[in-house]
Image (cartoon, rainbow, N blue to C red; front, side, top):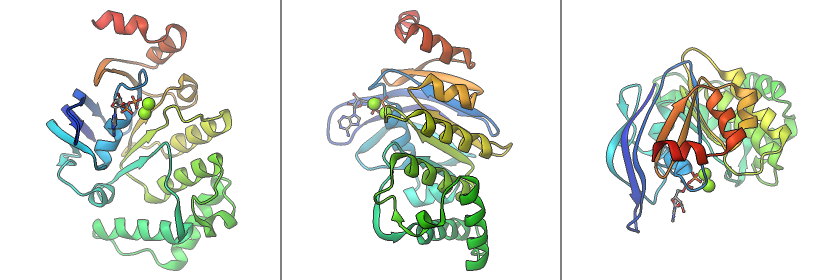
Length: 251
Ligand code: ADP
Ligand code: MG
Ligand code: MG
């Protein structure tokens, strides 16, 4: 599904190499987690995959189902089935949440050569999914994320993910002060959307989140590289012993 080979990234206007050769394969139907000390490049990886400005790819590749992601505009990446949820969701004053969702869904359908969803059908689907996520109708009408609480933003993010039905979901949940309820929400959202045709990459500091999600594979990132991969037990090892032992092992 997602295939990253020897990805190297530097800051665009600074001589600073951040990713120093990242290798990662996320198969369809699996959930991979990335943990790692602060500043190791986890968020940079998700930013580069999303096509955010300010980074320069100096080597390597990133493919989604065999198609080069790094060649595409951010909108094209989304249309081809990549979804990225960020630590700090953007607020869009003046644009109703429902309008935003419908525009996003239809842009994606169009890019896939599918017919637009009718207004009636969209309304039915969005109401169903919102209900599942305990999002009230009022929140669907408000401007996107404006004045939303942390928990509401998380719910909204999961709703976006549910509506877009992406192939590959990347969630960066690092150091953003997720409380237990929000963590549960994210985990439930991911678990509800787990399916054979879909891959997940969950970036997190919190072993607790992984208690709820139960990833298939856990990777540890440090200093711009994935330095160790294993099963869920790797997250427990980090929880118990921190990163020092793992870092010492690979040096
Ligand atoms: P993580 O998410 O693992 O905590 P980041 O990807 O946020 O790590 O950051 C990796 C390194 O790159 C850090 O040293 C950070 O300071 C640096 N960095 C990332 N983006 C920028 C930027 N836009 N300007 C300056 N430094 C940056
Ligand atoms: Mg950080
Ligand atoms: Mg980060």
